Amino acid sequence: MRQPLVAGNWKMNGSTASARALLADIKAGVAAVAKCEVAVCPPFIYLPLAQAELTNTAIAWGAQNLSTEAVGAFTGEISAAMLLDCGCSYVIVGHSERRTLYGEDDQRVATKFAVALAAGLKPILCVGETLEEREQGITEAVIARQLDAVIAAQGASALAAGVIAYEPVWAIGTGKTATPEQAQQVHAFIRGRVAAQDASVAEGLRILYGGSMKPGNAAELMAQPDIDGGLIGGAALVASDFLGICRAAHDSV
Ligand code: PGA
Image (cartoon, rainbow, N blue to C red; front, top):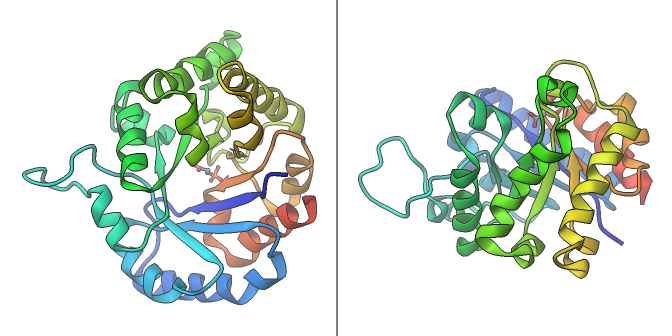
């Protein structure tokens, strides 16, 4: 049985005051959703705040990105060691906004995945197709390419220490959620592709859905056999919405 994970991707939102309030509200509600693992990924600059507020709670925290480099003259970058220093256990890699807006290609994402793993962080690898790609009927080919870049570099066994998030680009921040059937189909495809390399890694692998997940649609998504939680953007900024999604994950167990 895979324990569901619900991770909040705060993206570039918030202030010290709002981050503190949001963390306090999530802390207050987490005991009621104990069957779901809960994580938050605030902007880098609020990670020390997360560490201060969440140490010795049931809530994990992580970053939204990391550098491929270890140390040195890389202005503006943040290393895996720095994330560990802030107590992070997770790091998102290959989010579609990184791929699209910051030119991160499959190779770079695979390198980030490897760097995170080598440091002992748990990478949350995002994959997903654009609307155009879905309409062209190449969804599975796109997902396979994104996944295979990591498998080719690291081997399927490396996925055992990570998490995959299927985030159809057309569903991110748009209010358009994949139907449970659409999501399940891709999740099953991902699990099958990993299983072809390593059945036991595939069986234990958590595959999250992301893209306009809300309290109102979370339960039917989580009810799908290959959906093991969510990577939540907009709804992660409102404690009651985020906890509502965690509750759906908790109830799905
Ligand atoms: P959304 O974002 O929940 O706002 O669609 C999800 C994500 O980008 O991780």
